[in-house]
Image 1 (cartoon, rainbow, N blue to C red):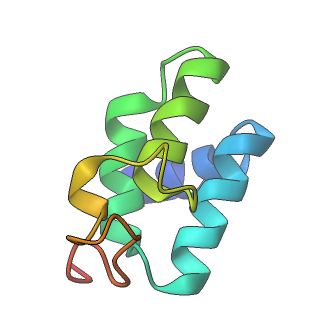
Image 2: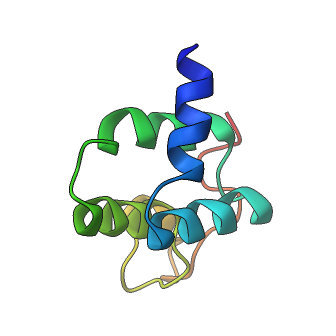
Length: 84
């Protein structure tokens, strides 16, 4: 039941959250497990805050992502998170 709620929750999330999550899943940057972890922790945040967290975890702008997403050259690393 929890998995269904997570799927529906992310599908109904504000547009900026959905866009970042969709991009990350399609590009292989994140797995459903990463998205599920994000949603478990951020579902109750205000829309603007959830969008900021989603962009920092799953976004494509190197200036706005968490440092763990970047390689030594400051560019996004493909496959961040190892696909777990």
